[in-house]
Image (cartoon, rainbow, N blue to C red; front, side, top):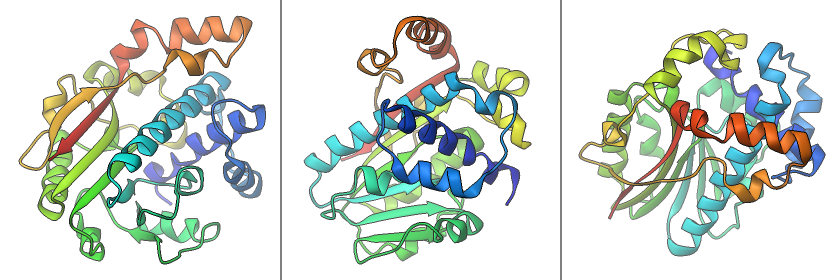
Length: 261
């Protein structure tokens, strides 16, 4: 597994950590996989603050996805860069066809813990070439989530992905988190992904940088809503709200929604 793929263990640890504490997510599958894999993280990768951040980020993505699934009843769900995430178990309702997409070696690992069905498929593929889209027969509407992925793709890669999705589907709703350019520069110094060997990342300041013929910017979402921060208590709540949810956080990290009608 290459270094980019190894980053999947960082959010997996975070979700397992917060689930055990009863915070933000109920993710027994993350707990199960983390316990079984025993992957060794070091340094900032095992920070409880980062775990809280990863847990809240996933909860925000889950909440947005549930809302979109209620509105777009006939849409397929596509989770690009799924890693070992159990979003299909947390959010999937069986009424929407669901596709989890990641590199072949990740999907191979994933199939040890997840089982495909008529409504759930795992596709091996790269977000930069979109050949995997040929395996999706549905073409009307799609709800797409990309959590912790865009920072490994250039703006041109993201535009190409958006154009490919826009060519394939008539209607699209996409939620994607990204670094700012400042965040990308700072990541070379203090990013936990460095602990698994990743050093090249990308960031944008203008959400329109990801736009192309396929997708248009819709709006920005809060990455760390107060209702989730309120699940923390005392000193931890104070530190998290000041460092991970304040103005500095927004200078590093953003959450954007795109669409095609």
